[in-house]
Amino acid sequence: MTRVFLTSGPRGSGKTFFVRQIKQIYPYFHYINRDEILIDLFGTVYISSEFNNSKKAYNIMFDRIKKIADATNLGDNKIIILDCWNLCASERKIIIRRLEESGADRINCIQFLISTELNIVYFQRKKGFSNYPEIAIACDNELYYKESTHIEYEEFDRVYKVDQDKPGSISVRTLQSIFSSHTT
Image (cartoon, rainbow, N blue to C red; front, top):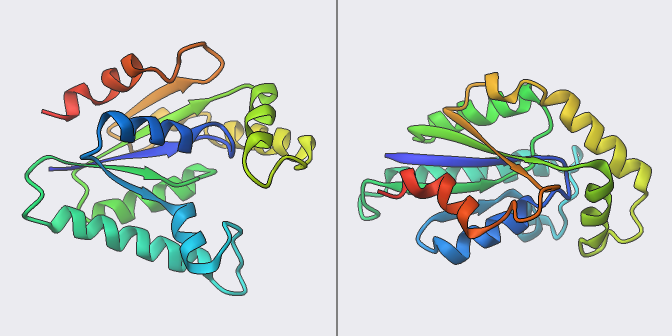
């Protein structure tokens, strides 16, 4: 069985930080990060329609997932953490379809909840984004939550919520509560 956990939340909400915490506890999980693919291919995370770099990155991402799903030497219980920014339901629907085509048996979502104020702090801590306009971060935050109001009714098997505004939301206990039933 191949299970995928897709991260979802506004940019700068702590998704990649959360994934790094998961890696420390569950090093045998498989990790795929769309931004790392973009950087490897193009040296930047910025998407350009001129170079069609988003499509290329997505194709590589799903090829990697398919290789993991099809691999017989990895055992029967494969868990993939997919760190891939996604803004709206239509985009997540495409991702879900591609994951199914790539061999995912279960597709879960880890949604990050974060206030605009904390999102601004987190986003501006990211390397290269210290001068990013607060208004742009606030608009991105607002748009993400507007587009994700009914994420639990999308086609995920389950949606887990991580509330970044609650102290300890990214704790060993949180990680274990999400993944304990999936690691056996």
